[in-house]
Image (tube, rainbow, N blue to C red; front, side, top):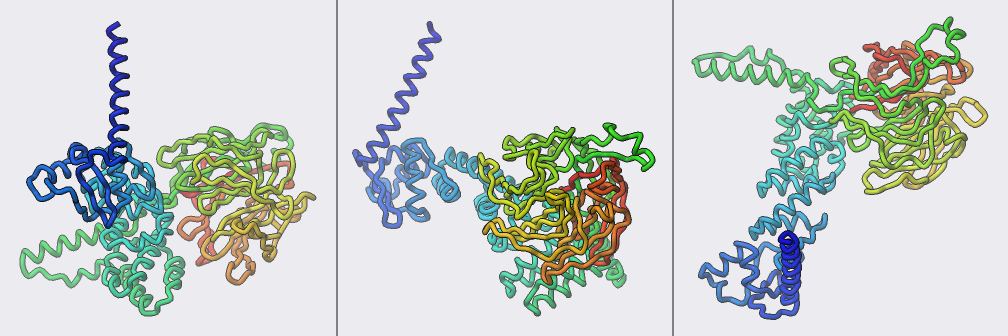
Length: 607
């Protein structure tokens, strides 16, 4: 009985408290018993001194300190805007803080000024949950200025993790020198290569050339130039239109790239103090020199090779192995370290897949569709590289797909054509990863039915290359799709027909690598399409023939893993475990460590 009485009292207390808040707010709305008027930029707010004093020490001190405001009925507040103050006044009277993405930062600063500590905590919590690439730089500066340390570290972590996306926001280039230097010194920034940091430095200095050029030597010293190939470095410098700035930057870059211990041979030691200083200088150089030649701890320098199937057998094994289960799809995932050259087994897929697609979006890896045991899948798995964990995405594609294409533009994933269910399809669907509760939706169609083609996105366009048509004919066709206008452009055909071809963009070129056709079988040849000249040219072929290889671009180099040694038209498959890397600037291929698991029809993504 006592417990029931206590429960009833609690409910009555809640009712009384809620009614009290409601009545208090109504008194202010009716201006009943109001004894002070707050004026902000010509806007007036009626209130009760006792309520304001109870809500915050700021007003309590103002009305009890013996100052002029104690007996005044008119208070003029500086440093606030009317909209923000109204949000705070409503909070003081109702306990409800109405935060939005547009007002949260201003409300936080105003709460801090008024010593509304509870409201400050709620603002910080709200902002921490709503950090994005558009607001992170502004909030980062605000958090540093007002010593919101927890928010500052949350923002720093977010910016490090999403720097390339953040660099597309113009706010990044308005930050001060100390902020930029802290980014360049960080081991935690996730980048594909140091050339991306060089591009950020160039753009930042270019925004205010006269005043920022003085910082250029220190900024460039913290870009790891030895990790940038001559080809990529030259490409970055060629983009600069200001000849004077280009000359200064080129000089600074050359100085840093050629800097060596020989510069210290002239050091003298006239005193023990000089000897100590020179020793410390040499130690600093050793640390700097070592760091310049090592990738950052969190930089994207690893490549995941995901799924596929394995059928490693000799040609004379064909008859004896027909109908075996050796070439079933699997979920094996292995990771190649581009710096160390080592392989590591990672968490496997939850569902075996081959002929699937994999893309990276917002620092997560999405694996789409594919097939296993003659069943085509519409499911999607998402991989978190930090946690080394796969989980199914709740939103499946609108239809199962295999031997299709996928690409990412502006955080939207596109799935294109291929075998759609049991039929060869033309449909295109998309999934907007940034939209809460988004579903896959059909948006357009391919000009014609095809499968086993290559697809890649570049500068807002999706390129669809080669494949096999509905009449089982190999294709050399190349088309570009513009999702924003839902329009197609026909480009020049490849030199050679290719299906199960690896397609990717490196520099200003579109590459078509390997694949197969009915005439030649599996191919070792590659060709590149110049996006400026609109023409195809052959490149040095790979050392091995490869149909349906896994491929990825990292730091201006092309990596190719495994693949099939037989044509897509063949009923007998042989996969390989060899891997190669292509250097575009020298047009050369080099062998690298073998893939631990022989595989074809796999996918590769840089993480």
